[in-house]
Length: 173
Image 1 (cartoon, rainbow, N blue to C red):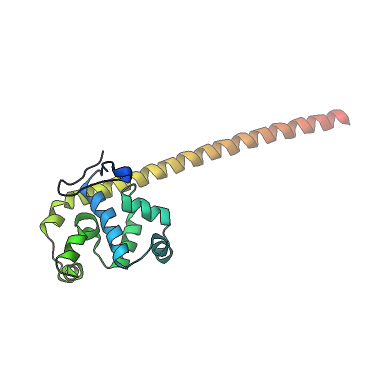
Image 2: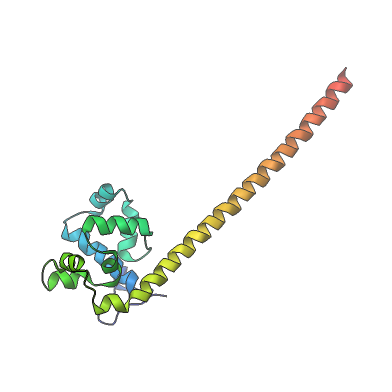
């Protein structure tokens, strides 16, 4: 299920209502798109610059998926925006209300009510991210176990074939 803040008009393709599961997801995608466009960059150029696939960046911008922490750190460093602001603030408001307040806020270590309000959502996001990584690792382990079982069955078949060939050789002589 998705959440769209009341003071934002959230529309997706074909003008249908777009739903976002929480404000962090909404802000992240919106902020990423704004920062990319403010530098007059195409998806392809940003993709080449940060070595992240163009489709992944597009998915992040529309809120289809959220990146891992390592990717978020790349965006944060490249655009010189704190990770917290990427997730929990409407960066367009900072730019529209006074130029480059984000860098000033970063330098001063200032937090605002929005950052404090969404702090729990950031932790929930990180928990979800870690849970997804854990599930991925569990799936990989399961697949490796199946591969090992398959190889063991293959080895048993080969041993049986070797015994059959040895018996055929004995009967042949």
